[in-house]
Image (cartoon, rainbow, N blue to C red; front, side, top):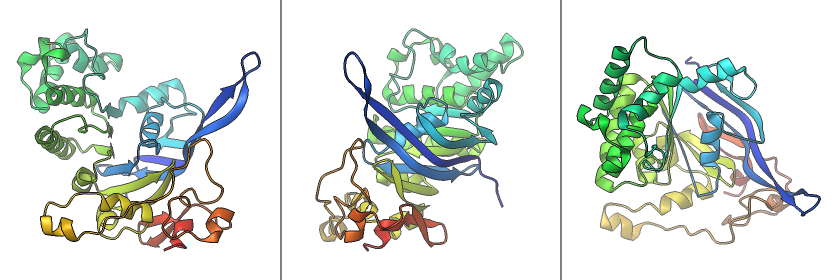
Length: 330
């Protein structure tokens, strides 16, 4: 059995809301992530999908140690990110790369490309001399399909796709085991998206990197993923292999998301059932008692609002987990 690379166990991230002028006190909490558990294995692509505000990017930031008000465990390569020594945290961060949604906003406009790509090498002291440093920087920019002549330029001199290639080069500079991709192609043209995705596939094969892929675009997720987790209001409501999620979805929220994906065949698109969720999306501050999905569920039961069914995931088929409460409404 292959050991997992990353284990997230019962992760909760709640942000307190303060009220009052002279004597501020907590008047509520934003439940950004609520009791999330999953694992990522070496070399696989694990994707997280869901609406804006469901907690996807919050999880990504917490993995690299940028989270606050966290409870639960985030264990990467046997290192507990939030209880380890600073030396071990530095080691974990060296083995985790991150690519952000906005390639321009994530690059320092005052630095040349050579300095941007080489910065992780300097921070983690991964070269013996200047010749080795220059050689590794040149090799990195070639790996992402750009010319060495670009190394002396600044980020504003590049297109969006080229900037994202530079971001990827920086992210793989330390030869990480895990690459977090937070909406890496959503800001790019469709033709450029395909190029970046092909680059990511090639790098994964060549370097054996695992990906945590966060996206709204389900067609891309289907194409690139090994396993998929569906998030709703800070919780994972369904998790399984990609084929199971897209061919045999079980949760009503997953079914609604998939029904909104356009079909390339006009006949299939015309005959496809569109599932429109009615009701209001609850606030992360004031969530309903019982099942969080009850306000939009097409077939809610009385037990949902009363909270008589224990929350959590249940394995419906091997490797396919679905929210326990919603299974009773299907």
